[in-house]
Length: 155
Image (cartoon, rainbow, N blue to C red; front, side, top):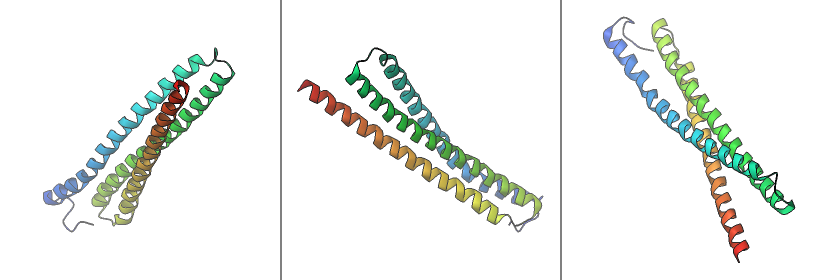
């Protein structure tokens, strides 16, 4: 993969430079995971608040609470999917960097493994962002439905 001797300082510096590039992806994934976990916490808080009002609810209110809880469940599932995919993206990025180092140390051609690991990291990242997008859209829809329900009750 690299044309210089494995112990050559220039070769080692080049390997480190190449390995630092995925650090930006890892940083972005860490930020995404922070956002996902914050939103998941907010969903959990809403579930707790709704669940506390469920025992004293009458028939119509209970049906409304059940719908809202089902909606929050879908949001939490999408966020779970986003967290899993972003985590897998991070793992694949780490595997790509590890492959780069192992390939450089062994003087072996590890390009296909490196390509596969980094490619999978990118695919997982894209899918995590799409799952997050779906959750955001679902959250926006829920807000709009809640506004309409309140408007209908007031009118």
